[in-house]
Length: 171
Image (cartoon, rainbow, N blue to C red; front, side):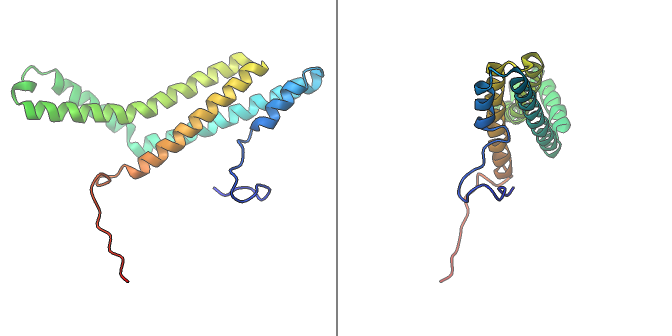
């Protein structure tokens, strides 16, 4: 997306929560009303970021055809359990490579989904503890970075992505 107009060109905007809010929470400890209000704000900001991440992740799982990949994994595992699999070593190796590849691709996204579930549970437990909110903010930021990287990897993971290309630049 585009940066808001108040962000200088060339600078990446801070997360919507930002370090300033957390610093404000820590600085306002003496004023219970302000602290409670800031904690509630931070809590809702983190909750909104988790919801946005979950929505992006669910969209990616649809794009990946996660149910189809789960079914393919189950079918390959049945084939892998057959005693005759290794009678043909090439077939066995190819099947195991395909199985591991599918598990790796899907496992990355499912691990992110579990991480978001854990963060939501921790957020419910945190209920305004500044140290936990700061830690959760960092964890959500890590998931955001992982998801950004994963989206890029997914975009570049096309059927011929590992093939060479010939580029001609006419003069």
